Image (cartoon, rainbow, N blue to C red; front, side, top):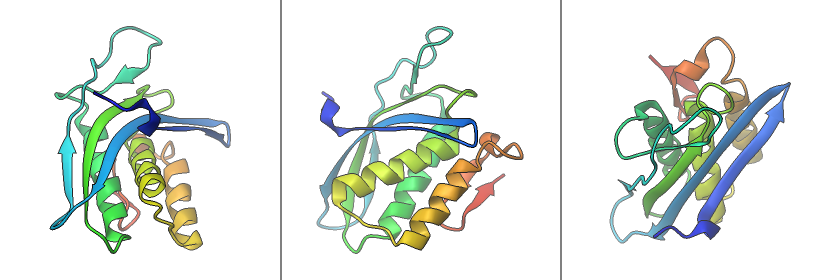
Length: 151
């Protein structure tokens, strides 16, 4: 069962370019280590114009980007967490790319845990995300720890 109140919606237009993702994660404190559990429930692509909801199989670049975003968020927290990824939605090639979904994961985690990133870090991550449509970066996996793309 998904708690719709945990949906985090990223919808922004910057410099004429769209950025859109919806992510639903459950975040709980952990007694030991950080843990990410993937419980995607989507159907994938269903028809032209519809929002795509990520299923358990496929969408590997989006899933890797979410993991990278959460690993970045973990690195900024002095606590340990268990995160269950329940839902991830977007529109491939139009508004959503791996960097956008990874950025949405960071923002969702910060909101749920009340983690406040330094202003400089927030600006760097935002600028990195909003440049993700440049230079074919939308085809690459973001590394939020070093603000570079994996090949």
